[in-house]
Length: 144
Image (cartoon, rainbow, N blue to C red):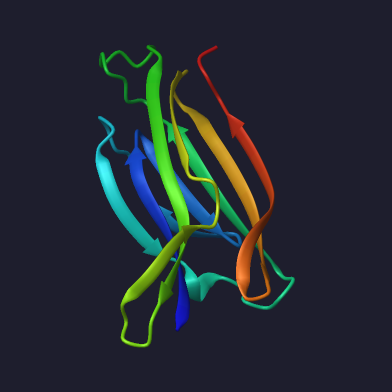
């Protein structure tokens, strides 16, 4: 058996960028109308697997110039949802289990245009063969 770690993105309004240990690993680009993305990004090979070493995973959501009305001064909707999961894979390549590593994120708000609407940072460490969140810092920008 082996373990795989994945980021599963569900919704993006405007732009979501994911960083792991200082490197950008995924960028949605500017997307409008809150599509159901259903993207999965494997991060197993990018994680530092040594016990006790930190891995910093950052989700940054940007609220660019897109607005429902087309008027760039209007408040913009933003919606981001994602999960980080651990999959247990058997010796035949079949998934046996999938569990959340972080609490799933799914928030929808409005904010001023051209800002970073979301910054969600997690520090993950491996202990007893499992990655766990040891700290989390979240900032969100709402309409002001």
